[in-house]
Image (cartoon, rainbow, N blue to C red):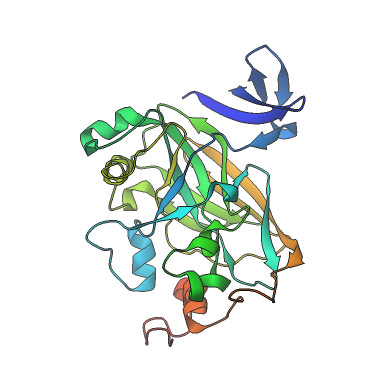
Length: 281
């Protein structure tokens, strides 16, 4: 399966192909993959994510999947890349990983059927849909700061074409330990359905990204942690967690919170009252 990456090479963004342990530019320049400065593999006009899709995720929360998918938007300023630093702002505590498969659009799509949607997909990449749940009380509707804060949308390492999404294993690691272990077969709505659903009313352009959902066991990470998401046939996306250089400003806007709503989401099935009662508001 061909894989394309974008890296910073001699000061310019360059598309490269993978040749074993090396990356090869169109003009023949080579660099070791481990030494390359990776960029997001695509430059989207928008990033759209499905809220819930994996059955293990809703089973963990002891809820059901909706009849049809719902979505939120991640601003492109949240984009990050393979080996990039994920910033947990000073004053925040509840930053969760969510390993996912990202769909990348290959040609303009509008009002296409699920049966046609595959023709509009360029390929797939690995994503980690981080959530800063300290802002969940104020942004639960839009998820804007929860999911859209800077650095919280790493993609990569590359764009893989001709990849069959069926029956693929997805695992997330924190400091080398498996913390999520799921499969695309858990998804209620497959990649083609998601593209067709969004494209009913929103035009999708080449490079646009759709995040397809995460399995069970999303949990908080800490500064210093190394988080990896591995998807069978797509590769492994690696990032590390750092503390932001400045605290969230206290003189404007809603502040980070630690309510039961925040804790119940961040801790998932480990929340002490899971299955006993809903979070108090």
